[in-house]
Length: 454
Image (cartoon, one colour):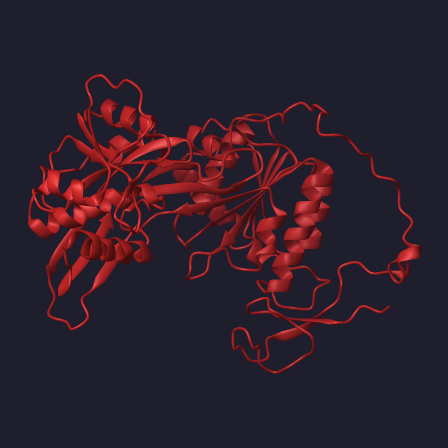
């Protein structure tokens, strides 16, 4: 049975059964093109004609040696990878334009090259002279990294076959052009084909390939989501342009824990590692002020302390503002609703601003109680003690729910000089000498004991 043709929108990747002038999914005009299968032949016409080799089978008890990892020497980068670079792996790194992806990967490539890994850096966006200028600024000219400025995928693969490198950096996947795909570079078809070929090359030749990917305005890697499924590891390089901190976050990792983070500081000499992020995020913290609360969080396997800042002010608008930086706006709306419905503290007619200091983005629900504390502190104009940390999840009923790794959170807080903590009742905490722990069952109790209201 003949395979029906596939028509794919080059703007959003939506598949259609037939051609049309306008994509129903994204509304783009003249963006739908016909795509042929990457591989098709006489053997694919009937199922009976498929005669391949038998696949070797194993059982779950089969033991295999762990992959041999290569350490780059950048502890924060190695932490995010799960302990170092794995051969025959494909890594996708995404981030906003100008955030420092090329700088980071050039530093990483230089470190691996100094570890006797044959390293190639292929730039599709810059000339070789521009990459060398960056290397001079970063003091990396002595590293034995081979450079190339090329976008033709066929020529790149031929070069890789000849050079036989150990590590290849492709900057970026959106600039690669496959001559067997009839669409423009950066389109869905081109990105998918290029990622497929490079990932297949990595697996078949035992080469580690790092792909740089642009992100959309929503913060997602541009192109089809299938690219993220092809690779072994997906990393996001995050940060605000106004802050010097940069966060490298693993959202997928087949060779290590996901949601692990590495913290870097942007300096004139490139990206510098931050060994103790908690101390850095709290370094500029002033005297206790209303709306300022320290949250003891967990990022991957690492405890991180960060300051949450809230401001509550009368609103001249019929619809008060709700502005959030570094946290989920929907969760803020939920906390405000719970405070009003369960505790009786309204925020009607008040503008609410919430900010995570340092440019870090907090995603775990354990920040609920710290956010509520910051909002109440700003509303009541009452500062919390400087040596206090807060963490806990808030349910819709107003109850406080325990969170994971409470003991690790408290140990990190104690190491930085905090002596008091507020946590949900039932938190699993061992013996913490020198740390005063207040456990509470619900939000009403928290408000009454902390702010003298309920």
